[in-house]
Image (cartoon, rainbow, N blue to C red; front, side, top):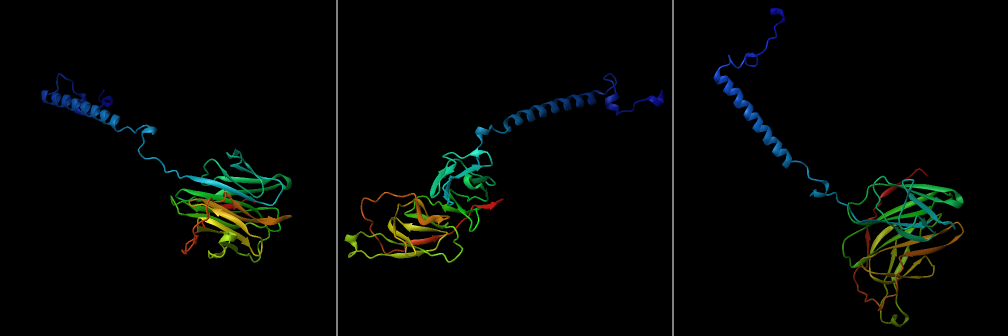
Amino acid sequence: QEAGLLLCPSICCASSDTMPTMVRGAIVATAILAAAEAAQVNLLSKHLRPAAAEDNLVEPIRFNQQLLICNAYPSREPVSVKKNSHESLEGGDVIPFRQCRYLQGQVEKKDQLEFSVQDIEMHGTFEVGELPSSDAILLLVVEKRANSPMVAFQSFAFPSSGERKEAQIAVINALEGNAGAVPKLTMEDHIEAKQEQTVSKRVEQLSFNRVYSVEEGSYDASIATDSKQVVRLAKNKNYVLLRTGGNGFDESLLVFPSEAPPQAAPQHTVMAWFKGLVHTSFARTFGQ
């Protein structure tokens, strides 16, 4: 039988009749203390339990970033756009040539915008990259590659700075086959005939594919020796001046959005009226 004995510590194997009184008291006290500690931990766990999602004090920052798409692809058929192969963008997923459209809904990093033109079986994909860490207008221009039916893209971000006293304009060259020398865009004060003798005219030559900050007012815009086009700019607004054409379409300058004539002629000042801003791209093109 000795070979089959189960050896254990003396306290756990001892009976209550043979256990010393002091030892029994210590075991009881230890058990009471353990129960009290367990109850305290239980109580604390209730208070330390994570709050419900709606009670969170810290929420992820979401910036107000609108997507503006301009179609500079010369075709009689509109460009269709879908997000991530199946999602139609709110506000309309078909954009005719020489039109711009704000699309509702947020875009996130790694989203894929897929473009197509039905009559020529053109397809192109644009992947969203790093987005600005601020409110911004995200501008995407769809254009045609030179000597190819394939699509190309240009992307810009209009910086947001609250209430601005100036307008912001993106001056973009999307004319097909523009690989050669690109003329500058001429911007000058628009002066009525009756004011020509009393108001001095300012003239500025702007490089394409840049974003500028400009005083509000009315201006004459022209490319090379082409006819002038009146451009009216309001403060704290964003505009696109887009050079388009090619593939059988005449060259022209698209202004989006177009403003109604002001009620009164602007008062011109001698301050620097054009200021170049940093060109920020927010995405990349792939899989064309």
